[in-house]
Image 1 (cartoon, helix red, strand yellow):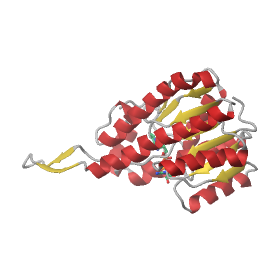
Image 2: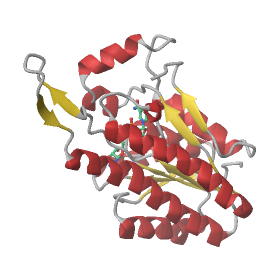
Image 3: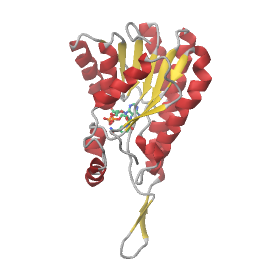
Image 4: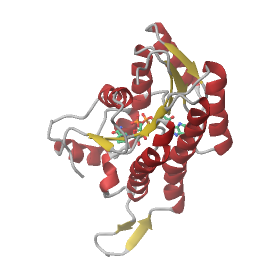
Length: 256
Ligand SMILES: NC(=O)c1ccc[n+]([C@@H]2O[C@H](COP(=O)([O-])OP(=O)(O)OC[C@H]3O[C@@H](n4cnc5c(N)ncnc54)[C@H](O)[C@@H]3O)[C@@H](O)[C@H]2O)c1
């Protein structure tokens, strides 16, 4: 698909990887839809893209809320006349061990709470389901085909300390396969991206610093990735009409 003249929405795109993808799509001539939970970051992101000569609009949306997601995807078509690309990127971390054990007593002192589990499922899995479903509704009804890109993670293989996150990201990779099969007849492709450690606020601010240092040493290329390197892969998926039904690891070679 040639992005010029198309409409591309990226959830969670006020910053981080999402913003880099929106910026890349706009640089290739698409109208980028910046969507995120309400806050000044949305308008700031729109402004940054416009300053570089790109087209962007901002629409707030909490991806875990069905009514907001339905209205987001409808508004995009109402305002731009189409929907061609949807990147399901919004995500959060709530890391913790399944059970935490005191070294001396060997007794459990705390456990991953249901709230910790549910918060991740609501945003990282239900949010991807809802945004993928509503993007598909609009893409099918518009009749131009499309590309749906869920953002998974290398943690989908099962990362200690991430029971909630790894489970959600494994499910997200499965959604890309399912949707590639169900939606191909409508000329809609779906492929996921599984980033490794990327230098964004999620990792630099929200991750346990000791855990991050440990993981950094395990990256064969010797550095974390940049958001633009994930955006590059999103561009590749959109532009290559053979790509569907897979998850592409962009990780500098790290395996968890
Ligand atoms: N950074 C990494 O190393 C890394 C690795 C693997 C996967 N990922 C995935 O990439 C995606 C982007 O991560 P990032 O590193 O750019 O994170 P980030 O925290 O910098 O950005 C995430 C964005 O999602 C938004 N968001 C959170 N909850 C939302 C909700 N309910 N509705 C709408 N928007 C919401 C946030 O406001 C934020 O702008 C996430 O799905 C993350 O799990 C990141």
